[in-house]
Figure: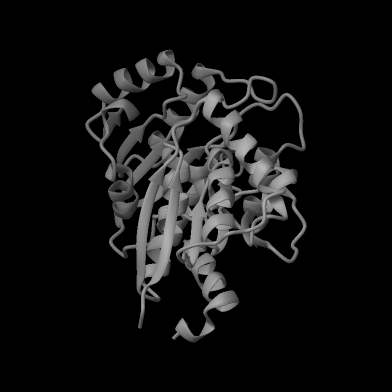
Length: 316
């Protein structure tokens, strides 16, 4: 079978890269593909230039040359380059997020998480969470746990209290003391929180702390694969869905909200209501245990949707 010619755009953000690569990996498992990767260098000057080319292209007749089957990318910075390439060479433009309103109808397919509250439509495919590269490898160790600490995403909607967050981490480890615990931070974790965790880990034989600055690519996926239980701060949506996709049992540490109704709150409420995760409050009170694993594979769903729409003969 002739490989599909795919062009993938990347904007330098690891989370966006994982979403795009997750779809590409799932697609390659179902049909031969030939991938060309392109990087977009983010800058105000290049963004203005791209918009100028895009608006100019709107009044210029299509002059397609060559052939591309599929154009994939995640992140607002790659949307204009994707659509310009589509105009020049054809192909289906697919993105793993909600594009700006001006561009949304120009995309052939958008994979949109349910917490974005976008109505399903002609080119909108709703996912539970973002696609990713994490999968259930079937090698979880019952005596291993993982704790993922985020930080401030948006000061207008969330507050962060390191002492409170640290107390919750300490409580989980004390109540589940037979496990070997790995704790890791994110680039958003406050320095004082990292200092507390590092000191705590140095005093415990069953606890290790790794700063996000020290961990290589692929490290966290390996830890997911071995961990039976994972606790994640509520701000870290990408890590929540990675843990679920890895087949782990997942708990959520709360983060104080200044207002309700945002996508983080909707995301947390959806996962708890569907018994996919357990809140810290319910777990520590004994009301609910961590739920049994329900591995997600949104990347596979996305890949199958692409093939079903345009190349159904490649589905087996």
